[in-house]
Amino acid sequence: MIFTRRTPKIDGFHYDAGLVISSLALLLIGYVMVVSSSLHLFDPEKGGHFWDYPVKQFMHILLGLGLAKTITRIPLRVWQKLGPWLFVVSVLLLIVVLVPGLGKTVNGSTRWLKLPGADVQVSEALKFAAVIYMAGYVNRHHQSLRVSAFGLFKPLLLFSVASVLLLLEPDFGSSVVVLIIAMGIMFLAGAKLSHFTLLFSMVAGLAVLLVIFEPYRLKRVTGFMDPWANPLGEGYQLSNALICFGHGGVLGTGLGNGIQKLSYLPEAHTDFLFSVIAEELGLVGVMAVIALFSVFVWRAFKVAEQAEKLDEKFAAYLAYGLGVWFGFQAFVNMGVNMGILPTKGLTLPLMSYGGGSMIIMCCAVGLLFRVHSEIAEINASNGPEPRVRAKRAQHV
Image (cartoon, rainbow, N blue to C red; front, side, top):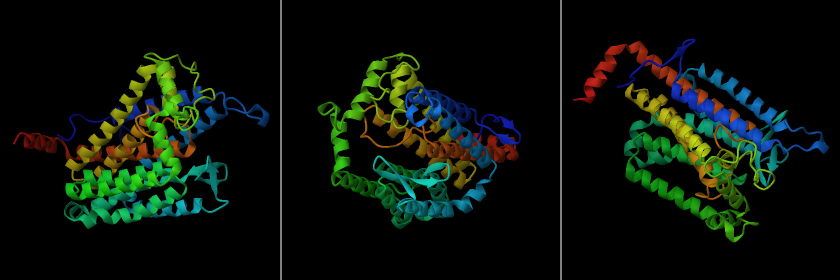
């Protein structure tokens, strides 16, 4: 069955309740926790105020929601045409950000493009473009992808260029996310398992070599395996994150009562926001956030499934790609915070502090809403008969 019920329609637009509730809940919880973890970060000697980070994040969310609303009004056929151009422009911006004087360096990484009034993390825009480009590529080369190894490897030539540029920043985490998006869409589009296994093995092997031959990455891995061996060195960030989980217990210490965020846990308002949630909201808060991400990814995959049944392949692969992106990045961020994965600089989608990340993530949600609305409209225009036939076909 395509749809068992009609989705809510407001001002000519169809909304999925699961997507709306999960995304808004993540935004709200994320903002509250960013406020809690950043109030102490202002520098009064430089004229700063305790509300600097909360106000900036609020503006990021407002701008992101405004752009998301605009994106929901743009038909998918337009995105399909723009996909290759968006990806090429994103790759060119990766080159621009490496030009001395144009890129901004923070903690040894040059990932931000300096613009008047804002710093943009180009890798976030690349992820957004990668989903659209790959959805269009798989839609155009669907048959060759299923039977030919070349059809599977061909798009990765362009993605390998983007990955090399990301590694030069360096941004190993984003390069992995971009490749996972590409491979995830191809796998869900029906790529031959033997070809996909070979491709995945090659990418995994290259990733292992990049870790082994880069001293700082190798230190992160060894520090992750036993953070307590050197809690003031390689294991400092992870050991303090784990203290958050232990201190929070089941119900947490209470909103605003966390201790580790007070200059003990680095990047508490960005990459390690999940640890602050664990300390202040406890296991209950952790499970709630995991549940919300699970609902979001589940609904994204359901939208993709519904699009496939209506033979709207571009829409289906777009929804699959967005679901893979959000699910994988959230999994990596939470895994890093809990000590399941080595430390990587990836934000928690829709929650962590950061202008570029928040704005792009909101845009991605808006695009997913657009996919759902178009599919719901197609289904509604077909009337009840297609749903009856689909139901009968399931029993044949």
